[in-house]
Image (cartoon, rainbow, N blue to C red; front, side):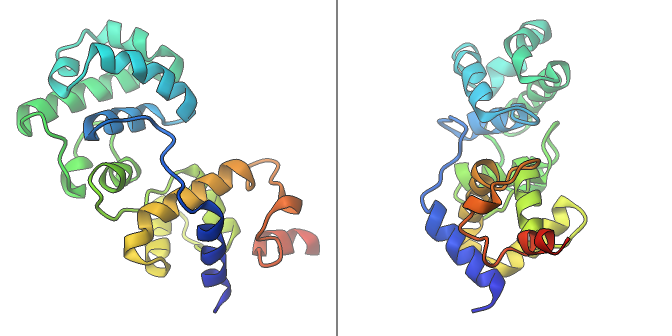
Length: 210
C-alpha cells in the first residue's frame, strides 16, 4: 500500500460516518444553505436558514421574495447583498425553468447564480446521491498538505482526488478532508503533534526539515 492509499485508509477509519454540517431537508434547502456558507460557518448558516426556510419553504416563494427582506434575513452570513441576489435569482430560475425542482446534473447546476463546481458537487452528493467531490478551502488545504494533490486550483484538485479515490466514496472523502481540516489540520495552527497521520504526513516532515 502506497502512502496516499494509507492516508486515505486512515482518514476513512477516523472519520467514517461523517455527515454534512449544514441542516437541510431537500435539495432546495441544501443548495441555498451551501450558497450562504461561502466564507461563513455552518453553525451560523444553520441559525439563519431555520427562519429563512420557514418564510420561504420552496424556490417559488424565495423567487418572489423582497430583496431587502432577504438581505436582512441573511445579514449575519456575510456578503449578504451578493448572496441575497444569488439565492433569489437561482430560485427564480429553478421555479421558472425547472418546475420548482433543483436540477440534478452538474451542467445545469453550475448555470445557476452563485453556484460553482463546489456547491454543485455538495448538492449532487448529499441531496441526490450522485458521486461528487466538492473542493472547498479545507479540502484544498488538507489534500495539498497530505500530498494527495499538487494542482494549482480547486478543479485540478478535484480531478487529482477523484483519480485516487473510489467513485462511490467521493462524497464521503469530501467529509473526511473537511473534518480533518476543521479538527486537526487548521490553516494557521495545525495540531500536528495530535495528528494520527503525523508519521506519514509530507507537510509535517517538510516542516521538521526546515
